[in-house]
Structure formats: C-alpha cells, structure tokens
Amino acid sequence: MYTATAAVVRHHGAPFVLEEIRVDEPRADEVLVRIRAAGVCHTDLSVRAGHTPFPVPAVLGHEGMGTVEAVGAGVTSVAPGDSVVLSFASCGRCPACLTGRPVRCAHWPALNLFGGSRLDGSATLSGTGRRTREALHGHFFGQSSFSTLALSTERAVVPVPAGLPPEVLAPLGCGVQTGAGSVLNVLRPEAGHTLVVYGVGSVGLAAVTAARLTAATRVIAVDPDPRRLALARRLGATDAVNPDEDDPLTAVRDLTCGRGAERALETSGVPRVLRQAVDGLAVSGVCGVVGAPPAGTEAAFDVPAMLDRGPRVVGVNQGEAVPRVFVPALVELYLAGRLPVDAIVSVFPFEAVEEAGAAAVRGEAVKPVLLMP
Image 1 (cartoon, one colour):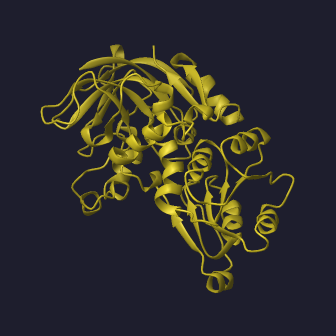
Image 2 (image 1 turned 180 degrees about the vertical axis):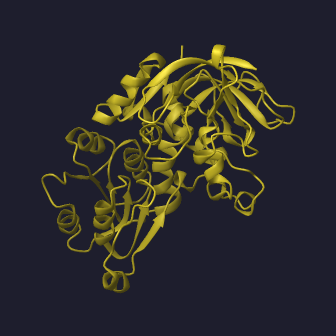
Image 3 (image 1 turned 30 degrees about the horizontal axis):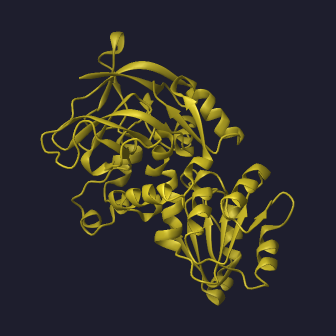
C-alpha cells in the first residue's frame, strides 16, 4: 500500500476535501503514477453534483499527468521515472479494443464512469486512520487523478517527453483529445466547408484550434460568454455568435449564404442547442455530439427535414481517439506551435481545488489545472 493525499468527495453536493488515503499496490498490468498535474473537467463537477452517476465517497479526476512511480510485473512499455499522460481505461480484449476502437470498449462504462473499482470489483483506494477499512470509490476513468498518486493500467498511460509543462500535458488525456479528435478524427472538414462549434469551453476551444489544422474555410463559434468568444477568435474562429444577442440558426445561414454548415460540433449538452446544430446543417451535413446531459435526456428533430436534407448525427466519445497514437500527435502539434493548449489553461495549486471548480462554473477558467505539491 502507498499513502497519498487526495481530494475526496464524501457525498453528492459536498466539497472536495483533501484527505490522506491509501493506494493499492500495482497489479501485473498496472502503473502507479505520481501525479504532477490534473485538469478539472465538467464531468468531475457533474459527478460531484450527482448529475452523472458514480458512487461516493470517491476520488475523481481524469486528466492526470505525472511520473511513473512503480509498475506491475507485466508492464513493459513504461518504467519508473518516465513522464506519462493518463487517459481513459479499456479492457484490450473485447472486439472493439482488438479492432483499434478502445472508446467503444465493451466494458467502457464500468471501467471509466460507473464502477468505482477495478472490473473485478476490487478497490484501488482506501481510507487511512479511523477510516482504514473504508473502501473509497476510485478508478475514475481508470485513474482518479485528484490525488498525489494514481493507479492506472498500462493501456491508459501514454509516454510523453520529459520537461514539458505539466499543466499543458494534463488536459491532453481528455478535454483536448475530445475536442481536437472530434474534428480531426470524426468530422474531418474539407476544403470549402464551414464548421460550427456550439459551446466553446475547453472541448469546444480545442475543436476550434484543431479546425485550423484542416481545410475548413469558415469556423463559427457559438457561445453566450463574450470572453470565450474572444478567445475562440484568437484561436482560429473566423466568426463568433452570441446566442443571447443573435439567433444562431439565422446567423449560420447568413454566414453561409443560406447553405448551412457542412459540419457542426455540439458540446453544451443542451437539447435545444443540439436541435439548432442539426437544423443549421447543409444538405448531407454531419453533427458530432459530445455534450453529455444527465441520463435520460432526449432531443427532438423535424423528421421531414431529416428525410429531405439527409443530415447525420454522430455521438463522439473522447474524440474517437486511440490515446497511445493521438496524445503523442497532440504533443508534437503543441511543440510545433500549432496547438496552443496553454491559451486555455488556468493553473491552481492542489489545495485550491474548490476554487478551481468554482472558477470553471463561473466561466472564469476555461480549463483549470491543479498542480500537485
């Protein structure tokens, strides 16, 4: 057993509280990582609020970056001292994993979101002191990186060059991977295409930035926050639409001379915004959906318009990325100055985790990143 300091959520709606915890010894295929930085994602805050089901008490966090502390007997791709980015977990054995689609792993929900433990039900974390026998729920996205130590699997850790800013590397494993991957791996806008990004938080801004790497002619950012629209323009959006001031559907049609957008990405998780994104598509346009509202949320569409215009609505998870391939590519793009991740990052010390979450909710921090002591 290892001892670590973690931000623990005792019950839904409770604050993050720093506590001493115990982290299990790595099994044969596991990697223990000393976390240097961890991004704060909307999903972490959604779980804490009780909107996304995950058992408590729990240690959350799923955008970890750090240094390998120890490895299991079967681990061969990383060694103690290596710098790594942590991403989502997958089993490596189901048909989806074996065909290079780990985000569609048959065990993805249990391994990442709903289980709170390893796939066999065993806990990776426990309390200390009078809570020694308490099993904390962990293994969140296969890592639970709101902790100075995180236990992950070999498949979920990605080696990265040493010496790079940890606050830049941490968000690559989820938020940046999701936004950039949605554009580069799924939507793939072509020359002359218009891409509309609905919601320019960290995922949406990563999508806007990635769109600069494509042949898209026009990139439209839609968001009610003027600060984020200004940042979207800095990162490559050609146009910005504030839905509190202008109707997005009318604006998209005006900007495309009535044609509509060939590609759209919906990141907000708001059903009426998804409807706007689909209604604003050009003939045979594609809308990627990454916004995650509470379970059971439904959206309505005009069926005759669907038949007439032939749009496609595609659910996207983690940018449909293979982290061991995609994250190193994102690192190279950052080093080349083509993916300015640092523009969306706000750094907070680990002990200010509550402040970081609040800043994200208020819109003052696009991507809060916790730096560990």
